[in-house]
Length: 123
Image 1: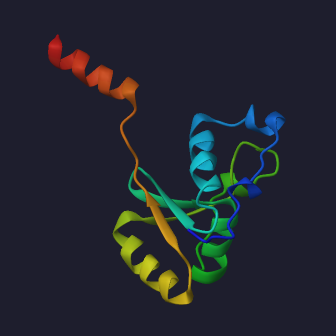
Image 2 (image 1 turned 90 degrees about the vertical axis):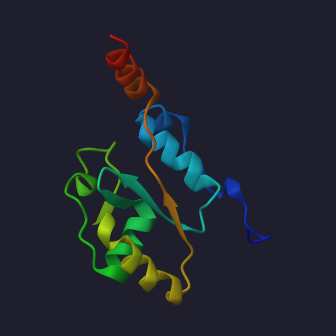
């Protein structure tokens, strides 16, 4: 939304992109066009922040990093912090007055899961 914002400021080399998971592709495709926004991505009953957003969550909100996101031997793991869904509103209400833009990405059903459910009902 900033007129000086350049969405190409996020560049992921193809060698790294090819090693990423489907979720990481989705996350970075979204983050690339919302780089100036802290993103909370819903996974299960938690909202998680990744990479630089996770560092802000750790520094500003005192959130703990998850173990997988800090292991240098697991390069596919992104740095991560999270909050339970019941805490999200309180966390956002702390970030916005500090000048942070916040985005919330909701988890959607995977098409493979929908097919399984439909298949069960039709059986």
